[in-house]
Structure formats: C-alpha cells, structure tokens
Amino acid sequence: MIKLEKVSKKFGIGPHALSDINLVVDKGEFVFLVGPTGSGKTTIFRLIIRELLPSEGSIVIDEWDIVNLPKQKIPHLRKKVGVVFQDLKLLADRTIFENVALPLEVIGIKPEEAKARVDDVLGRIGILEHKEKFPVQLSGGEIQRTAIARALILSPDILLADEPTGNLDEDTSWEIAKLLSDINAKGTTVIMATHDKEIVKKLSKRVVVLDKGKIARDEKGKSASAQRDEKEEGK
Ligand SMILES: Nc1ncnc2c1ncn2[C@@H]1O[C@H](COP(=O)(O)OP(=O)(O)OP(=O)(O)O)[C@@H](O)[C@H]1O
Ligand SMILES: [Mg+2]
Image (cartoon, rainbow, N blue to C red; front, side):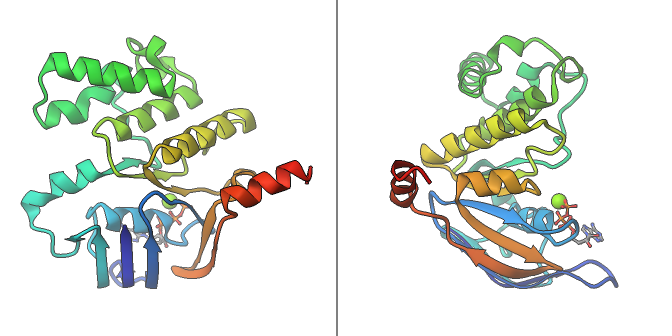
C-alpha cells in the first residue's frame, strides 16, 4: 500500500509543485495519474522513491515511513519500487542485456544468476531477440520495453511508469499499456502517468487527475465484472 497524507512540495521560491495531496493506492491496484504538463505527476513519483523529500506531509509504503527512512534502507526501497523514468535513462554504450542487468550488478548478484534472470525478464517483455543490440539500434517501443524490463528486474511490488507511451504510435502505445496491465494482473501494483486519453478510456482503471499540484478528481475504475457485462451487452 502507498499512502500520501497532506503531502506538499515546493521547489525554491516557486509556487507549490504539489499541495495537500491525499492518496491511497492499495496493493495490486492499477492507477492512471493524469493531468496537464507541470501538474506534479513526476514529482509524486520522485517523492515515492525518495529522490525528493516532501516539504510537508507523510508518505508511507507498506510499513515504511519514507520521509524518515534511514539512508541505508533506500536501496531496499528501490528494490520494492521499480520505475520507468520519463527520460528512460538507458545507457547508450551498453547493450540491452547490460542495461537490464545493471540493477543486479549494483546489488552484487553473480553473473550466472544475473544472466538467467535477465533472459527471463527479456523473454517475458518480448525483447529477448534484441539483447545484444545497443539502444540506438532499437525502435521507440523496444526501448520502452527495455526500460520496463529494467524496472522489473528486481521483482518490485510496485511499478511506477512515467509516460511510458510518449512518442509511440497508437498501436505500439496500446501494446505497452496492455503489457503494464498484464504485469498488474500478475500482482504488481502499477501507477502509470500518462497524457494518452485513448488508453485511459480503453483500460477503464482508476484515474487520479492532478491539476496545478492538487488532486482534482479521483475516479474509480470499472470492476472486471462490469467490464465483462458491457462486453456481453455489446456496448
Ligand atoms: N527540480 C525542480 N526544481 C524546480 N521546480 C521543479 C523541479 N521539478 C519539478 N518542478 C516544477 O514542479 C512542477 C511539477 O512538475 P512535474 O515534473 O511533476 O510535472 P508533470 O505533471 O510530471 O509534467 P509533465 O506532464 O510535463 O511530465 C512544475 O511546475 C515544474 O516546473
Ligand atoms: Mg512528468
């Protein structure tokens, strides 16, 4: 569970990037985070992974108080929460395999075990055939899949995806969204920040709307059974 209570964030002398955010995301939920550019989506993600500290308020993930988390626990937090960053952050001079293996290398997993785990994730995400290529040799959708694979390599409980379909064509965007939905169906909590209205509409999940740093709306998604009923009625 992720729980933000009365969270505000102010950078320097500017206006509040976030103000009085109250948000609970239960284990196993899929949530879209939407809102105009600058409304605070990425800032929420950066607070959740303790890349930033809030100016006010509390952030709790499961039993962990993120604001007061001791420094030595931050690597544990980063294992629990995988992130697909808006700017992707793939290393251009490393292959797809090496990029995805990097978090394992950092925590000292042995090369043989790392290889098995990376091959497994690349297979599940559908890019195993590209593992020896460099990022520049891949399409936008394949790059996006690589970033998702890297975010999943430490088997996180929570996946934060920051505009994972930006710059992709409609079909590829839909494939990426379905991939995230499948990952969620297998138990991972997913929060996806997006500007893609079509995908939000099609997936019928919970939608949290931010506007100028505040939660403007929080719309519950349709339950799986309601979606099935609609399908049967041919709506
Ligand atoms: N490091 C920073 N220093 C100063 N201001 C910042 C910093 N990071 C973000 N902001 C400001 O905080 C506000 C929220 O930014 P944020 O990146 O969270 O928006 P966003 O909803 O993710 O936008 P986009 O849809 O364009 O990605 C913006 O006004 C932004 O300029
Ligand atoms: Mg952003």
